[in-house]
Length: 140
Image (cartoon, rainbow, N blue to C red; front, side, top):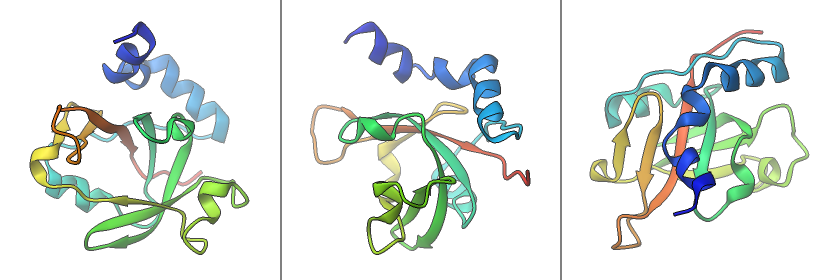
């Protein structure tokens, strides 16, 4: 594993206060990560308007670092758009609902506070599908 990927996977990017301040400056708002300890808590916090950032994605690395906002929640997953970028191709996909993320089985999640790591159930090698950090809801 190379050093860049290792530092992203370790969650250093978002446990670092400086990185959180940089995200806050982008939107003139203070962002603080939400500590999630279980899948039920995770599903509870994923609601319309919730904001999160992906710190690693196996299949879509271009999503890393973009602040996303949940637009629709269903029983088996949720849709999210790139915050303040309605014309972004990931915001316009799925008839304007945004990028779809399925809820995986509970054993696929590792809650590393504040990072949520999701393992790829399609692979049998314990590979990581994505990592994310959810933020407290803020009104800016």
